Length: 370
Ligand code: SF4
Image (cartoon, rainbow, N blue to C red; front, side):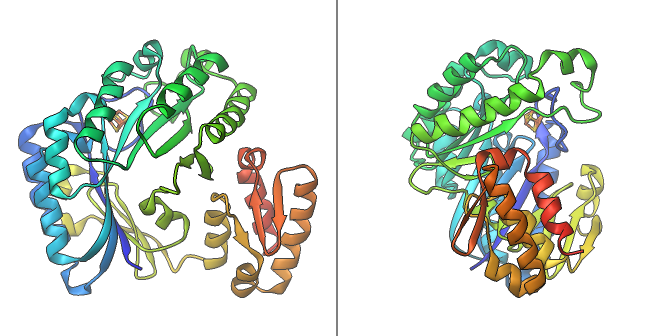
């Protein structure tokens, strides 16, 4: 099994009002300098001889990079990592691709594409400050299919201003009818310091009860449309799970490149400073260690409960001892009476209703160990 590689592409045409990901405004010259810095950073891993089987270009807006630039980064990765049978994903904005560009991306080796569609309602897209409308988003998906991508994912956002259950269902049905294998469905969250961080916006979006109903409705509807839920927010047809994201949830190693990119490698969690200019100046000098030897039991419970298949009691016992396992089992029995979780043989997994309160269930499981 190999590590995952994450490449952060921190450029956007403009800042969406809800977004708190690290990004700066797109400038062609800056992207050239940035690609150079990335390649230099990638080279520094040569000595470790790391095997890798997933590569993920996330952002920002990776589809603002030219196929040539993506090719350069992939050549760097192929030359310095042992990359084999890799899933290679590119996040794309529907407004920054066309058929020719998608064909070129496909030629570089990208084999999975993830579109930030968000909604099928153009008023809701305008509310989100997106540059595309739904017609151009669906055209981009069909173009990607024609360009040879058979692994396409789309994002849906829940709880938007002006979104009721009916309009959410229209969005789900329209997006699910596209030639795609994967959907990520996220609740709109107002992040501190973003343009949406004000009472007018807070009052205009779905309240907590409606958000919960929307989430449960989405899980059920996507299931009926053939998209199996495999993680709190992720759904797939034909088991086309995101192999890269599965690495995060299974506690496997991943290495991030670019400002604000996180890594988990050689027993350390670390990230790079959120500062593109410093990164371009010296990409090897922006590392901040966030955790040394993270607690394996805690990590296993927290990450695995995000997945539909949940935790194995045997594994909890191996990592944290019999007492912890028994405490968790007893608590799970109570949660299962309220249909928040399911206990099946050795496994405990959360139901969609349980996912809605996953943070408190996880906290209560972890308390058992303290
Ligand atoms: S949502 Fe995507 S396109 Fe919009 S600012 Fe954030 S990273 Fe950029």
